[in-house]
Length: 274
Length: 335
Ligand SMILES: Nc1ncnc2c1ncn2[C@@H]1O[C@H](COP(=O)(O)OP(=O)(O)OP(=O)(O)O)[C@@H](O)[C@H]1O
Ligand SMILES: [Mg+2]
Image 1 (tube, helix red, strand yellow):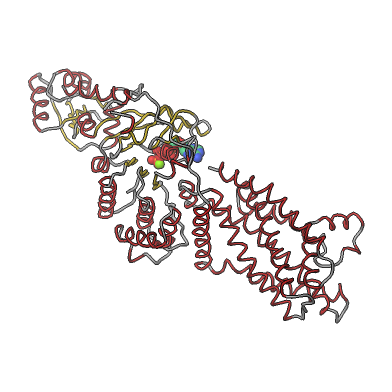
Image 2 (spheres, rainbow over the protein chains, first blue to last red):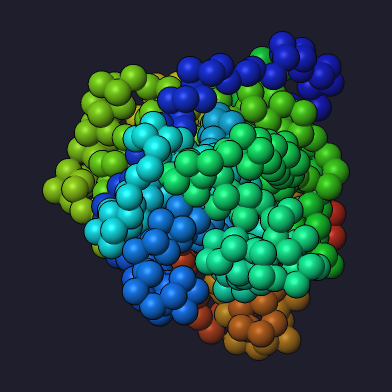
């Protein structure tokens, strides 16, 4: 037993192994299953997904609907409001990812994942897949509420599904921002605080609740470039008819742009985090 | 010995946390198919070492290779060959024991069927079958520990790190865990195990490394270290405490067979002599009587981690000898 005889460096093994697409999909699905089982174990975590669409729809239709659309005109307002509200609900669920990741990271199981031969991004992608699932549930409830309150579909079911899909795409893109926030900030509360400050102006300085035509010029300019407003416009046009191409393209461009910038940053942050 | 036989090779490893030097130039080797016990008190740097070796933290200086893969430049390849049971449980508390193990099997690329099969097998081995369906968050500390161990062994890793694996376990469960570790070694795994228990090191480890304040202060085969520590410690209390240094000197220089040294303990008023046999005990006392020392009391006790430290640091407090130097010194002392 003499450590001193070891002088030659070990032969450099071949390049770092890659995890193929099939492997990545297998890992992601195992992690999505984990997230789903967590929800099953803790059904209260679905509270926001179920209650937010119900409460928001009721509140805005009955509290503000009369004032915005005129008394007795709530029926027409439902058609204006619900598609945009769907966008807002997706957004709020996307925000929850940040706090979720932040809490997850404090748990010991993260250490285990980080010592395993899986792509670090698969933990994040699995989280996004799970949250998109939650968004779909929320959208279904939102639309159910809408139809119960008199929403009428003036286009086709395919258009409606396209509106839902567009919210998902944009919501998934936004999640990268909140994941980055969740990995950067120290506590889940801090994440929530910052996220609220970012989301509030996006939500209210938009066309979600009322047309932007009555806003002062500077606010209208902001609202016209607000991606959330673009999404609300696109969803509204897909449900009620009208020109869709412009706002749909804007939303897709925002989604691609946000993902292209934020996803690599988030994955890099996740890798570096110790 | 060739390069190929070394499963874990650590050279000059340094890791700082602000002012703290958690690792201060650690060298060690673990031969393939053996168990290395890393002994050390709280804050010695054991967990930091394990975390560097499992790619959880990056060292500030030095190199570490596991199965030939470098921790810094080849972390992905390295992760394929290791399993880790950290000091703190790393299972998902909301998932049941079975689901935890199934998930890990899938992440290790086992087929659905194999993952399920292997999960049940590990649950059985660690006596968790009855609790398999309950969320891990409802497990007792010892059960969680066992689940964690099962999780780290599920992929039959070539190199297994166990950071104080049996702390907080009851004696029966401790034996069970020891059995499973031995089984992994019999199947060809290499194990690096940190512990505070001499007994555990003795049960499992082929070789030991003693660390303190981020440095290796002793190393060698278990029997060598035991010879050094003396198997037991004989404590002799001179009637006159002023005699302490002279008595220690007399024992150390008497040239009695197998007596490596003696250390005076002023605070306790005793001389500590590591011994391995009753013959040595008799010889020491006989020698002292012959030379006219008046003895007020004697006692013997089994070595604890403290004694290992006393024995090791008492002699070489300021330097950190390389393992082979230590071995030579031990052999000389024993000769
Ligand atoms: N993340 C950290 N930040 C700051 N200091 C740290 C960190 N991790 C460890 N240390 C310090 O490094 C030293 C070594 O810690 P380490 O956890 O490796 O000891 P240990 O031998 O595992 O102790 P124990 O037996 O208590 O588990 C300690 O002084 C500890 O305070
Ligand atoms: Mg520790």
